[in-house]
Image (cartoon, rainbow, N blue to C red; front, side, top):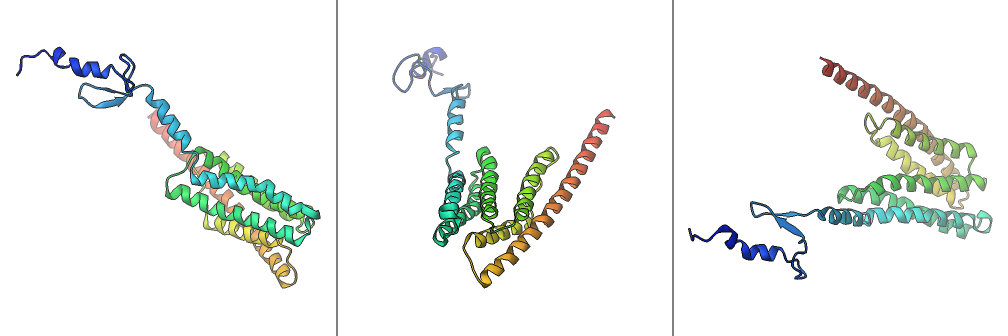
Amino acid sequence: MTGVPASAAGGTSGAKSATNASGVPGAPSAAASDAAGETRPVRGGKLGAAAVNQASLWNIANILTMVRLVLVPGFVVLMLMDGGYDPVWRAWAWAAFAVAMITDVFDGHLARTYDLVTDFGKIADPIADKAIMGAALICLSYLGDLPWWVTGVILGRELGITLLRFVVIRYGVIPASRGGKLKTLTQGIAVGMYVLALEGPLATLRWWVMAAAVILTVVTGFDYVRQAIVLRRRGTAEREAAEEGAER
């Protein structure tokens, strides 16, 4: 024991803590010390955390999603240039469509692998997916290359399942099935083949690929409806059981 009062011994450190990084006495410092001598953030620390979270929006996954959104109007312009039947412009439109489809694969993979999932990505990613596919289908039907009923079936299914997911989200999340992923791949290939000005056997082949895409679209749509019904029943039963347990 030195016999020195605690207030005197802490005088020097107390004076230092009252001076901020710029050397101005009395200004609040970035962190304060607790009784155990450990540093803790002051009130302003939440603002710094919010800034970090906001900066995280500009990650590679979200940038790819935004690129896909920007490609949608560009694709439409290329698709309809010179009346929409010029093979060269259709080839450029196909390139834009292909890039959009490829970024769709990579942005989700990057977000899950490197923990880059954000609220913006959850909302923008499905919008970008449906925007590029919807734009391609509508352009093809407008040009007379694809029957309107095909466009109606595919877009109706996509919008319906999206709404269904929101309806049952209180009970749980409907996971993407293998059939759904196969449907997306088949749709992308079929639409891409229609975007190109194909002739001969390839033009016949694309009809069969589109037929497979339509079948998968309908079948997986009914499967998602089945999953939603099961999820809702299970969630309702669990909630009723919990209420009965609380009453007891």
